[in-house]
Image (spheres, rainbow, N blue to C red):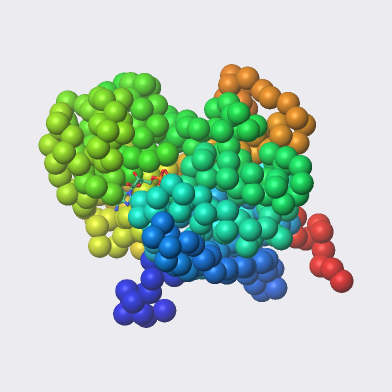
Length: 421
Ligand code: NAD
């Protein structure tokens, strides 16, 4: 694609181009043949649905919904559902592909999937949101299920969304099916420790990537949602000084350190970090460019690009979000000696504990928070060590190494299963 065409592409298309380029580079390193490359670059199943929604004033709107199962060779498809106005089929496909490599990298028996509805949840009442969720789930019902494809929360969705999905699916089945979604409330079979699991994984990845003690290390976090806010809290608990945070409403900085819990209470009360009293305001761009030890992008794709990468001053970037760094930015950061812990490793804690939740549901049992956390830590550390070893052995960046391992395991599974018929 020409640079001019690239700038015209939607953010979703750019994310998919990044994912395909990363796959291509991993396939080169693994010497995969053309047929296997094409298999891995092509989603197994893509569904686009229309979701009609009755608004409170009686009007009917129609929004688009998507579910993409990128790969099911290593197990049932697994991946979150995003409610966001700019979600499109390309973005959902990219996110599904990253899920495939992520599950393989951390060694859990899933393929990759993702779903999305192109809607702004903030523009809907709770009842409208429930109707959108249930109708969307009804439309994708034939392809999801505990043995087929298991959704989870992502941007703009939460425990309540998962409860509605579990209920819609169960009512259709005629009996309760808790294993159809993860990230549910614990009263419906959700796992202890699922909320915050992605962020605890981010903390594990950060501490592993950091040389030396976390005490006093400065941190900036972009995105203060389900991943970013607990990540800020866990890093502060580990001894770091969280100096800057942003969300969709604005960005704030306090070089003496933010009181993360107080900021969360402010966000709870006002709806965003904007206007927080115990910090100065700054622009979204400046937040990313703060002179900090660690930057945690935990919002959307394409935050760090060729345009701003040369101004990033963090020494370590830990990708809480999926796809926050473009391939051009990756090259600039590598040249500047900045370490990037890639998304498919750094934010894998969420899908790890989703897997643990699903296993508990299938066995109709419930594990202690401690047991869940120990398993999370073991799987994260094992994956991190494998990536670091591959990176050192082959002179690759952590992202390149993570992709070689993830893509390589899926390619091996394809070879072993063979091609039917
Ligand atoms: P969320 O909806 O809970 O939070 C998103 C946050 O990003 C919000 O605070 C929002 O205000 C903020 N934001 C949006 N645009 C922004 C901008 N331009 N600048 C700064 N902040 C902005 O979503 P989430 O679940 O926390 O997901 C965030 C990222 O983490 C996504 O990339 C998602 O795919 C990834 N992720 C989530 C999970 C999970 O378990 N929720 C797991 C793995 C990866």
